[in-house]
Image (cartoon, rainbow, N blue to C red; front, side, top):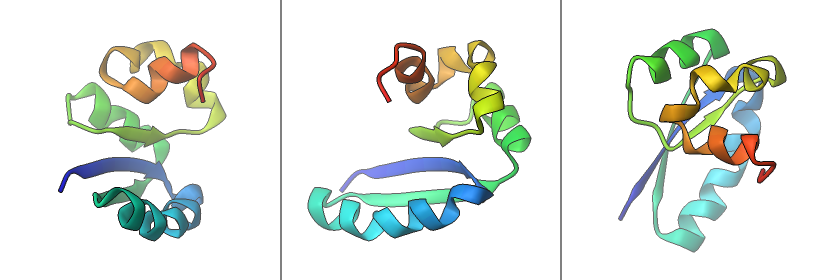
Length: 82
């Protein structure tokens, strides 16, 4: 079983927790999500913390160049793939 590590803004907590059971059931994988302020999440990513998905506010997505090298979801967003 793989683990999907998510850092999410607190405002999206209900959404992430709402889809987690279906994701786990369909994929057989586990979700480990942490919810906090987006500035704190950005600092964690920049510090090199491994993460699979980061849920950011529109403002920080606009500054994605500073986290893009460490974040696949930012690369997808930059390419219009989300």
